[in-house]
Amino acid sequence: VKQEETEQREEKLARLKARVQELRRQRDELRAKVDLQQKGQLGKAGVVSDAAQPSAQAVLEWKIKSVKAMLQVFYLTGISGKLTKQGVCFCISTAYEGTYLDSYYLDLLTKPEVRIHRHSVPTFIPLEQIAKKHLETDIRRFLSVLADHLNAYVGRRHQADQLQEHFSDQIEGTLQRNSLCNLLVFNYNLSSRSKTFPFNARLLYGDLCCSLPTEVTVSCT
Amino acid sequence: MDETVAEYIRRTVLKIPRDEIKTMLQKWGFLSEMQLQTVNFHQLKENISQDVVQLCEENSADIKQAAVLDIIYNHIYPNKRMWSVYQMNKTGEEIEFFDFTDFKKKFKRRLRSALKNVTINFREYEDNAIWIRIAWGTPYTKPNQYKTSYVVYHSQTPYVFLSASVLRSNLPLLCQALVVASNYHDIREVELRSHSLNSLKDIVFKRYSQNFQTYCPRPLSERKVAPESADVRIIQENRNEKERIQRVNREVFGDGPQPKLEFAQYKLETMFKSDPKMDVMYKKEPFRCLVKFSSPHLLESLKSLAPVGMADAPLSPLLTCIPHKARNYFKIREKKGFFPESFVSP
Image 1: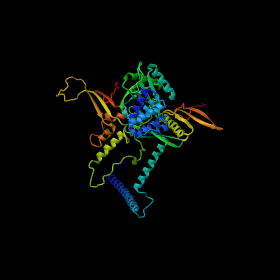
Image 2 (image 1 turned 120 degrees about the vertical axis):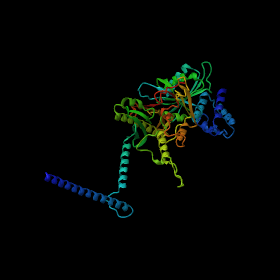
Image 3 (image 1 turned 90 degrees about the vertical axis):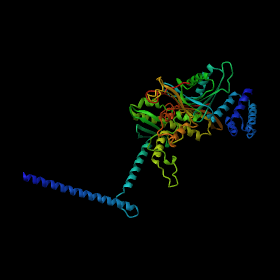
């Protein structure tokens, strides 16, 4: 029995010695790291530094930059969001053929069920209808349908604005439009062989998710 | 030209500030540029109006043209009238195309079928706003051009802005005509009133600056930054608290200008809470009182309450919910929290 006890004590001693070695090794490693960091800081003051080891500040700056870039990418996809205390706030950014247009916000609550708290969507967009259909069942679908409506609306509005701006000399009188820009009526003149013909165009946009007309009537008045 | 028309034009011109008269007449377009050149716009307004009436005589103005001048005046100076907001409802889900010609036809037909003696004028503006001017008569008298109602309607929206005349008896008729013309089912008054038409529009169309949490906020340079005090010896003792107040205020009110409302009215029907030993109200019934906040610009003054130290931040949600709930008349009853608001019809 005495032999067993001695053996155990020796084993324990060996283990503790190994532990001490390990801890010393770690301490030396950390010391080396600290030295290098300090050298790196000095390096910024003008002394030639070890370029392979970036300082903590530079690493942090790089991280912030890449996160910002990621958020910008999300924003450019057209639908981005941020978690809030009570839910999530979505931002739908619209564009038409390379021109960035308005952004619209939706502040959603998630408890007890998903519902809209505040928003900046125009009143003529059928938000309540879309929400009733999709908000509680499939939020992705809800956002997608709403984004389609908004993008199509700004697309139609942009086209109507461009028409008024660039062809104002050819349009007779005013361009008749409405809030959703889904009905455009205007008169214009076409000249051919020194005679001018008055025309009337009526563009109907039957699909609110589309920025192209579904029905066009052109008549010679 | 009719004597009444002449007088009406004269009085309308007298309302316009002298420096604006020429521009407004040009907008009107009834008098030619050559005719306008003959008027001396630097003389007394009395004389200007007489000259203008003379020119209108030459062009044989009728009441319809005079009404257009009135619309133009009210469009440029809408804040002289008190506007109320009405909301329409419909159950259908059909896509509305909103044809302006169709709207006008239906509106006039509906109104005239009930009351023949009305003058109705429409004017459409760039921002899709339709202005309707109605001068009311009775079944036996001609329309009184000085008793007018104004309606402003943006197509394909459920909101109507009304500046009613004194004759409230014509209101149901007007509402009916609006509902029919715009293809809705019913209409009710919303508890929101102000002199500033644009602010009412901002509130219901959600055009005012709400502060949404986003990862891509507007650059800091756009926000007003309080200037650092130049003297280093001045230390802000309450800097943390001041910053907290600014932050909370910004979260609630947003960064931009607030819509302009003149008052908020709270009708309280709550129980008087006192020490039971004092036994003030032996009758256990609600203590009725009316609290009214007035200001030339109510929301801006509420926004500045906490920063100047007159109130704690965050402010009571009863005050801060005004633009969000789109109302400035509230009825507060006893149980279950703050907002059992019902719609009070006047």
